[in-house]
Amino acid sequence: DPHVGESNSTPVWLCPSLNCGTAYDSTEIETHLLDVVRRKTMGWVLQDLKCLKCDGVKEANMAKYCSCAGNFDTVSKSSDIKQLLLTFKGIAEHYKMPLLLELVEWTIEMN
Image (cartoon, rainbow, N blue to C red; front, side, top):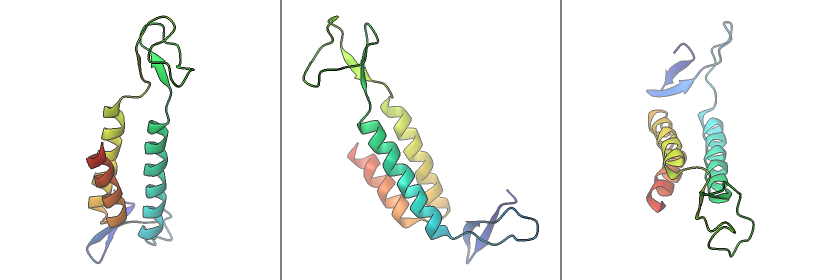
C-alpha cells in the first residue's frame, strides 16, 4: 500500500498527497479507533431485540415472550461484533497501538 510507511520500525499511515507523504499521528488515529470500538460495542449492547416468529421489535422491557408467543433474539449476531473486534485487534497489533489492543482484548475476553 503506497499510503503506509515505517517510522522506527512501526508501520504508519502516510499522507496520500504526492507532494507531502508526511506520517499521520498514530496516537490521534488510535484515539479515533478507540472511539469507534466503544461506539460499536455500545451499539451492540443497546440494540433492539426482535421476535423470531413475527419479526416485531420488542417493546416491553420485562416481557419474556412476544405477544405472538415468539422468542426474542438480537438483531445483530455476536459473531458480527466478534469479527469486527478481531479486525481491530489485527490493526492494533500491526500498527503497535497498545491502548486499542488492550480495549479490544478485554472486550473479547469479557464476552
